[in-house]
Length: 298
Length: 272
Image (cartoon, rainbow over all chains, first blue to last red; front, side, top):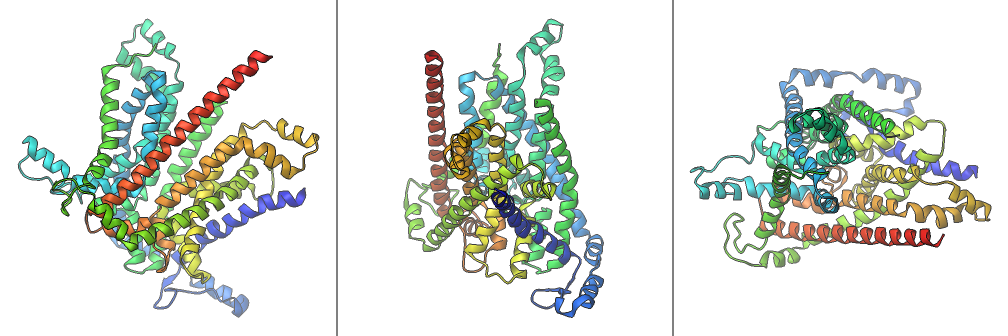
């Protein structure tokens, strides 16, 4: 019985230690190392054969140079700031698009809801890459959108949308919309309609009842949805590299280029560490919100 | 009393149009005769033919499928174990670290997961290819599986297991005959989720693969970086159809199962 328990805990534990925690510590270590013309291209290497002396000189050689470097080159600052800006703006747009949809779903007839729910979940099972790619054909200079707008006579010259930040916003809103709709719908569906009737009996107009009753009661869904969009959007790589242009700075893209094009592993690792530090606060806030939900739910 | 207003109807119509029109346009243009993806030149299925003759895509599809089957199966086993540890094993040394390691990969940006695993594989001198992608995919998808399965385990009535033990089952028989059938729906949806995540992943596979193994997303990404291509439209259409058929079938099966269960319960209630 004890052996069973040991194996049950030990196998997944060791797996996660070896393939999640250790790799993460390696990133941290390389972020503190120096770039070198060697394979692997960084210094120092931990040399255990030299004994205690080797370990000491290894730790002595680690420094925060790469982090200092990140502050001197304003490319990185701009990339962090513009990732934040893109993530915030697209989260707000996703909320504005997603809330009315979740609201509509929650008010639809009960027999319709499973179908509507499936229609929201279906895109989630479809390849992310393909959904981003679909927009390339729509937004390009001679794409479907421009052809349509010229046909209607609204514009005479094609608009440049692909390879701008606008295309990145569209891409993020499109791909993450289900993550916003589902938690809001879950919150709205549980809502007791008699509360609205009570508010109206007490003299609220419908709009006022919506703002004073419906919105506060769906607050936890709104918060969860916003974090579910915001957290992955910050580190996004596929959307800015397919839909964004050369002027689109996002930290996921910078990390990728630092690693694959410039082969600067220490700087790429330092970029990764700072990205994580930025994400820690929203992640903790998100966890708090979930915890509160669970406690409130029972 | 629900009031489904014109506003609700409009927002649902516009919203679903936004979600589905891009994919519909993609599907339509995959039947376009012209190489220029933006000009309609008549109906044709020639790009599907081209695609099926393109060995690189077929190879990549095969690699992707292999990786997805192996990693999702491994992830389901490890994730189910992890879920039962989280829900049932009570206190043990390093429990906080364990649950932290289950939840952290869910919110970790893909670029960081990919980078860190690549640095590990280089550090220990592992040849990169199908095997390393399987390791990487298993690691992040087992966390999703364990979240799905643990939510089912939490609502599980343990007295059923105790009854089976009292009636003389061995612990393994209890798991096989009682626990597994009850958590099966969660285990299956965990497997499906892991399978889809693996099929879909570009970033982590790009970091952890070597020259010997190219997955379909890597192939698609390098093809579409240069612009829209009709072959990729055809490939996307095939993938979208498979997913659509799969999801609709799955939902019909679960619906039928739910109806059957309800009928059984009603019959049981009448019998007593």
